[in-house]
Image (cartoon, rainbow, N blue to C red; front, side, top):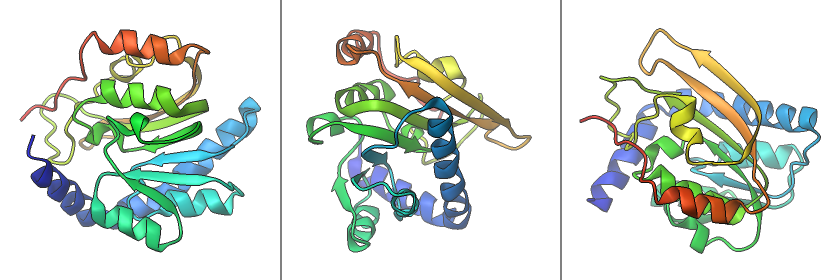
Length: 212
């Protein structure tokens, strides 16, 4: 993989859609907060995977979260988050589990589809996850061509195969007539021995790559 090219593509694509991405960031955090409250789960310490300009971090801070941290592969975005006063590790999601210290609840909205290996990212999430993990992803069917998406997400099962024995608290599917065909949101809680289960599952292979 050409890491420099990959990072340039991620940065350029996000900047080209900055208004749309930033407009929905607050709404997704608020939805996650509502789901957690309804499930009786505390917000706790939150790790945001792919915070870009830091909108999710700012919104979570406004909701009263005391301990926040971001993991961002694009150096420019990581720097923006730090300049806004947040902890933000410049790192990829696939191996962040070895770099993040302590336990965190994980918020990953429209970030995992940018990974080259979601199975590895799932193992990293298991290493750091405390009580819950919120994931939002676009559904992409055959023929979808997004240069910033390294992996294809085609169904709930495509994602959830990488989270064996985790409990699904709530899911939401939003259909679209455009490409991608829609998006889904899911709130998961890990099993007590989640790391062992994830390591076993990861041996089955990684996520299908996006078609060229």
